[in-house]
Image: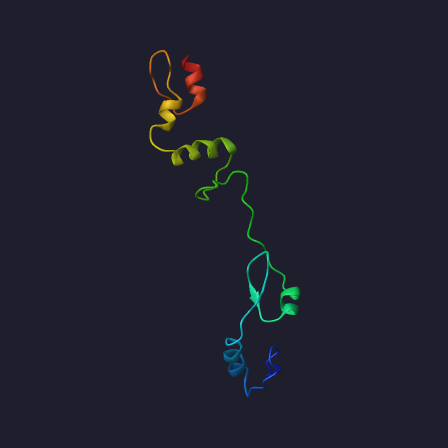
Length: 109
C-alpha cells in the first residue's frame, strides 16, 4: 500500500502514520444517499452505499414498530393518540358506550 497522502501528497513511513495524518484533512464530499463523507470527489463517485431501508407499509411511522397487516398497524396507531381522543370519536350517540374499534361501534348500533 502506498504511504503517500492522496489529498496533499505528503509521504509517511507507515500506513498507521498515514491514517493518523488523514484525520487532519476535512471530508467535504458527502454521499447524498447515506451521508458518508470522503476526502476526494473520486472516492465519493466510487462509493457504493446501501441507502437506509424505506419503511414497509406495515411499519409505524412514529415508533418504527412492525405489524403483520395494515389492520394491526391501525390498531397500534391508536396508542399514539392522546387519551380521550378515541373514546370521544367512538362513542355511541344513543347510550354513550365507548368503543376502540369503529366496526364494533357500528355493530352495536
